[in-house]
Image (cartoon, rainbow, N blue to C red; front, side, top):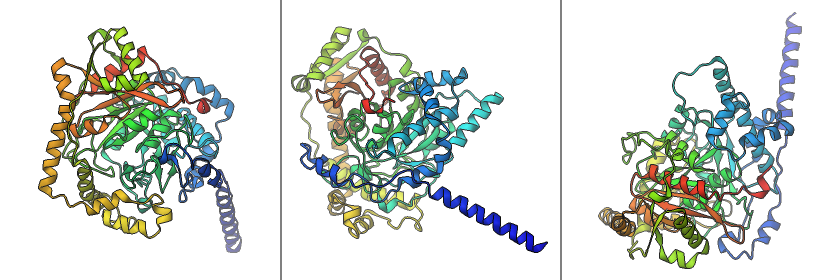
Length: 558
């Protein structure tokens, strides 16, 4: 009897092994020779788009996509097409209504987005190199929400973000997925949830996965491509792969939202890193006031200027996602204890144009025809427009803020959040040494900015003076006209004035303004005073509603 029992065990173990091997043999993606594409970009008029590589030399997409493949493949193309009109480009309230009325489940919502990701990201002719990690539990988490709905279990009033699949920039700590900041040095970095991810989960959001970014939030190399990381490869723009820049550093967040890979995404900004990719990918991006959202558990550049922020297809969803991340964080010295009433509902209450007072920058009117036409349209709609020339203010020392802050803040992050058995660096100095050990793979575009961090000799006293002067100068740049003419906001383009807004610690909202003759997106950016997010969102909603400029990228419409 014992002999037969042992034989049965051997057979079962063998079957399990064979089953495991068969699963491992599933090849969803095959690396390809990207040299032809690289060569085709060698003469690109934008020097930053003269790529050295496109495909990551590190990331195996099979490891990312295989765990959920069996479940995702159960959604047929016919079923996917049936879901398409209910989800594609729809706002959160529309999607929630479909779920409430039984036409859609949370599970199918998740499967819809995963289907799109697999469809486009596993095809080397359409991949944006955007999704670099997936939450292996997300389908089961969605099913659990469906089970609770069937039972009628509602323990509290649901936040609108409840059950909505969200993608995160890969410098935001997230349990169950590595947080790499795009660097090979952090490719094994396993961490708990950051504060904003805790808030999202508390409000019922489903974390779908992580997206690529400009490595170290574009504070590594100088003059290098935006959207490139050694870990994730070169992110590409859905409006023109290898034709237009993705913007940076939240490139994956911008491209993923543009291509409808999730309901929304979270980005981070120090100076332009939400505004730039939002503008380049024709999505709505909000860079909040410093302190509105927690920064703890996010790989830093600067504790002075860093913030996370929502990136969405429309203003309504932007307000919802921002609201879902709010909360006072005692671990973040800049965090403000306030519930900021009006943020959640801002996307539902546009400001009448007749009540708007907006500042238009004369130089932009004279040099950009789309901006000029937009200003004319706003006047015709009833808004009061004050044309002005901002004062010239010095921005001396801006780079030193980033250098010294990152030298200190990265060391603190690595000490507080990383496991030294998994992450072998503990400072910028260590990272520079690590990168130099294999420069072709780890830093193909060099690490000039990291080297600059090490050579910056600015003292603590000098740094504090720089911060004070720049904050004053940044506010002067906007406040002279805003105070004199009682303006609600100043109107800019893309991330043109992101640096001034950064040092002023002012919020900025960018909304699709149209497309250039080449097809490249361009956006209108509303910049307001501290904690005026609700007002900016209401202004943006009015503009978006009257001038619905966003168009889905043509190769990502099915």
